[in-house]
Length: 236
Image 1: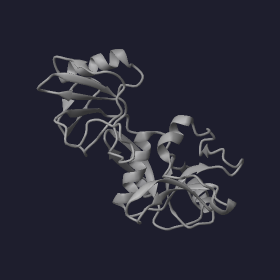
Image 2 (image 1 turned 90 degrees about the vertical axis):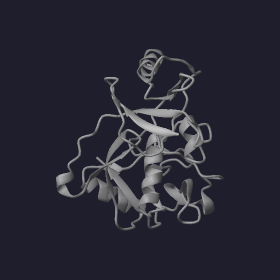
Image 3 (image 1 turned 45 degrees about the vertical axis):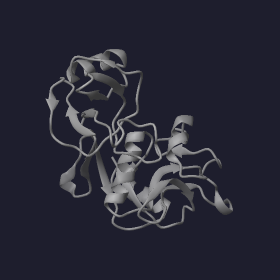
């Protein structure tokens, strides 16, 4: 499997990226080239086509959504690690990020660029929210597969396996709400949780973290006591 970046203008950029995958949008077809494949994907899926998987030998074109670094618990992603197909990624718009303050940096994975602050200390959930608020930001939300993948791999890359997520059920038990006030959707529920989570163990777990299974091998999200001390990420 190899990865390239595809600009919206349909020019191919051969800058190497991390190994990326995507979620298939529909059935594959045959295209003359990568560029034709991409524009056909856009015609068919104007709102969701953000990547393509193309085989140069067979000219097979498969439409894809936003790309992300592999998540082992999402088993339907393409292309597989041993595939001869190539994934071409559409670079997403780069957000404004005030890096001069020293609080925020830009992080890029598989075409997705985010402006984030990665904490260097562990605090409870409410303190984490307050620290983010002081920087005119909020706790990072893993409300798409691509954002979950970014969050997941940053916790691994920076050795922060237990990190707060902007998600809680403080208002009503069992009704999880994102930092922006939106309730978790049934689709999101299917892919974000670690096995057997959330479980509200001992009746006092209302805040959500990435769960470190074996410390350096996170396995999904987990509800925990809001008083636990965890790392956190802020996003403007």
